[in-house]
Length: 386
Image (tube, rainbow, N blue to C red):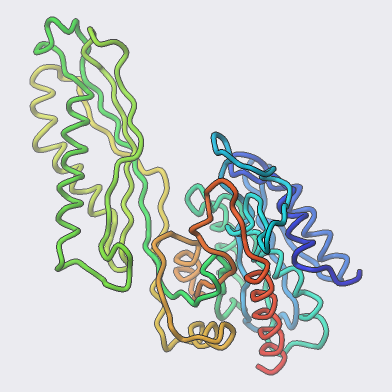
């Protein structure tokens, strides 16, 4: 197979509408076939339904650790967004490549695939591993099965480079996330007799107010880490549902909230505080009116933060590849914390900017894509000499 440019590969990748709610198997099949055409075998880690898969492949010696190049294949939806181009067809305008996932993060995957011939050109003394996951956008769910398998192998990778969009600036840290759902069960009655019911919306409002108080406490200067923006752990409620009619005291209400936690802060503490408040302050009042009243919390998703040290092998490598040791942090999450938890130190560095991610007319500049190509060519040289 002749070499294919990162732009041409990005055009193919964008053409697969791998929104998280849908299958990514067509895209994974394309990558598997592309690698096979270059003589590289890959393995798949399917979800339970067999509708999605992670892909993992190794180039170079299999009897030692190496560098993982990791990216997620899923993208966020385009529903309701005012795109001026077809989101699933690559469009070039004034040095920019538009399409869903160009920045977050198919541009990086395209560069990785384009670099495979360079990795194959000479025998590597240290292997490179390609790890492409599913369902990152809905809580970093898919990569976990692949990481579980890697942890059981005799030669675990030494470090990981995740190509989330950082404008090719080296990133060593990001916040973790906990997403929760709170379900409030009250007692319905005619609104003319409101005191005889248990208004689930009003009690949900008290719980949301408590979350606001907790968020205010976390924002105090004593809890700041100035490497991050914002420099503190945050709490926010994003979805609420409840009520059927104004003249019925609502029996049910539920809301979803999230905690974006600085590395070192345990996000579960927020949920525990809310549970304590519910049990000690609210439930006794609710059950005094109706014994069946209840407040239930359940997790939706979670992933850990990332805090790689500046003197680590992973940090030194990303500084070499990017040409900068001005290490930064990002507010958004990645799969990096999960790789790190699995014993694979991780850094984040990739083309494009998250300022364009998740928005209509998402794009990556051609200059950024070429810059990533050059970074991976430097990695090929490094792996030959390591």
